[in-house]
Length: 106
Image 1 (cartoon, rainbow, N blue to C red):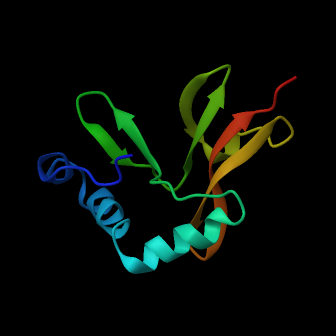
Image 2: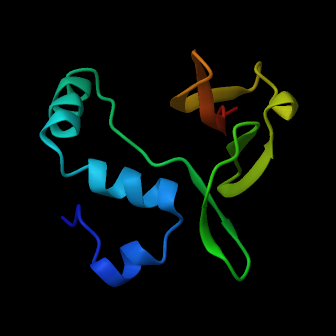
């Protein structure tokens, strides 16, 4: 399974996402991944795609949402906490917040 991207692809990412990709190879992050695995958790790189630009960092006030197998990006205030399950978290401004949510199966 691939964990490292080639240098050309890496150089085309925004700097913040290059930092994230390089961090995966560090001993510190590898240890964090091992510890998270005990809880069936992993590490992700919060991002979104913009037409003609490719990968960009997921803005602080945006969240990725999956509904009926379709992914979209919305302002975090638009997420219905009663019907959505957080599946990705990140640390922003001293607080752990959701970065991605999926609609609960009904």
